[in-house]
Every structure is written in structure tokens, then in C-alpha cells.
Length: 242
Figure 1 (cartoon, rainbow, N blue to C red):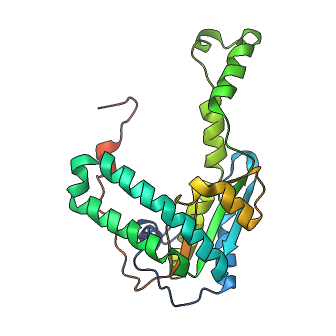
Figure 2: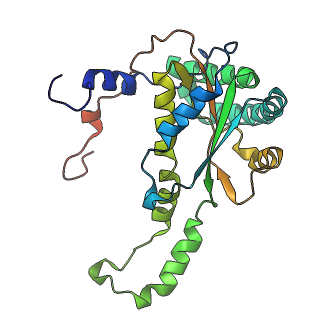
């Protein structure tokens, strides 16, 4: 398309075909350090609240470390799978639900063999929404918010800022990987063991591990857009519409 700053067709192809890759990760092909570093340089160009740039990235390639992480990952997966499968009721029998479950199970089985595991982190701990709201309410007498004063809370805003400062960078990292022929996914399965993983990797207690991103070259590159409800069916203009 002429007259546009980017090739929109190619950009849209990247954005709409960057999938969560679990079963099509090439477990035998090494991932050069330079490729991950290039993708991370792209990632840190993402927007961040107040330009804090408070992200940190821990890249794991040593087999002994990945083996230990895989042990914790599997314990968490076994518990999570049973809990979610039970709560999902009849929905678990749908083809898509079974496909998703099988894909997640495959990752749990092979996580130690993935060439690189990346843990995105944020400096600091997640905001305590309740404590922040309580502090706000205790001080509202000194603030004048006019007719909007009743019911105002700021805890959720602080939490949104905290996680909103890292997830754009994580997604940019995944897009940069995809454009270089690599696949990835976001998983939080190690987070129940955040303290143990922190001790294993030397991550300070005051740093929040946000998720885990397995990274590998993909088996094939023929990824397609997923089946989604059209955005226009979930979009309201000017007012919320059921």
C-alpha cells in the first residue's frame, strides 16, 4: 500500500500470526544469544509508564537450571490442570478446550528441553490495592475532587501501571522473535514458586517475576490468524452496549 509509513499487509501478517507456540517449538535447534539480544533491544522500545524502564530480563540456557525449573513447573501444572479442568465443567469437552489443554500439557512435558527460557521482571512488588485505597480514603478530606469525590479509588490504577509497564515490552519481544523465525508463549506456571525460583537464580525478593517465555525456533512458519469473534461484535462506541 502506497503512501503509508509501513507495509501494512506485512505488518498485519506479523501481528495476526504471532501465536502462542508450545508444540511446534524446535527443541533441537540452538538459539544464538545474539538473536535473543536483538529481540530484547526491540522489546525495550515499548511504552512504559512514566518512562520508568523498570523491566529486567533473566535468560536461562544452562541445562541444570532448566531441569530444576521444569520440576517446579510440572508440580504447578499438575495442580493447575486439575483445578481448571474441574472448574471448566462442560466447556472442557469442547474441541478448542481439549486442544488448549493438550498444548499446555505438551509444554509442561518439554519445558526443560526448550533452548532458552526468559523471565521478564519488574523492579518492585505489585501494589497492594486494598492498602493504597485505604490510604487514599484516609486522606480524601484534604483533597477536593468536586462531585466526583465519592467512590474514587486509585489502587487499581497503580496496579494497572505496574503490569502495564512490562507487558507491552513482552509482546514486542514475542513479535521480534516471530519476525526472526522463532516462537514463544507466555506462561505463569512457575510463579507459585517465585520465591524458590528467585533463590535459584539470585533474583532479589524485591523484584517481581511477571511470567516465563519459552523461546525456540519454530517447526515450520505457516502460522495463521486464530478464530476470533470479530472485534466489531465486541466493540461499543460512545456508550457500553450489551
